[in-house]
Length: 163
Image (cartoon, rainbow, N blue to C red; front, side, top):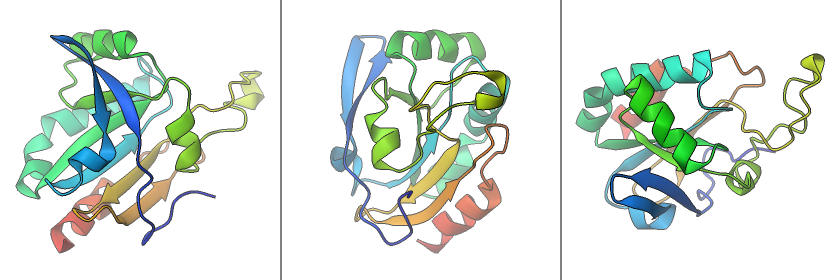
């Protein structure tokens, strides 16, 4: 079962790749400074994931104006994520959930990713969105079962406006 509205957001520490090298990012260290939008995606370099993060990057000022930091999470390694971000112009923080522990903690890991295509890759994150307020409580939760279905970004923004 995925994390629900009203739950305390599970803490995590993941790796991101910056110009200075790999760095860790811990959720509990971000809580309190702004509201957070956690966007889980299945895989870097895929069409829908690329479109989602490029669209978010283009409209990032909307989230900044709502006092929110947007973070993308996938199971790709941080070096692949950095190459993806550079190639596509993705400007949000990307975190590597390489072991899929965070996807499992949030209840958004596939048991089998695209089994109809014989792709049995358990642990891959379902496309999901969570809004975490400054106290660390989940205020919005959405999990898509089909990897091509995007979160409702109007509902995410409405949630942020209410905080």
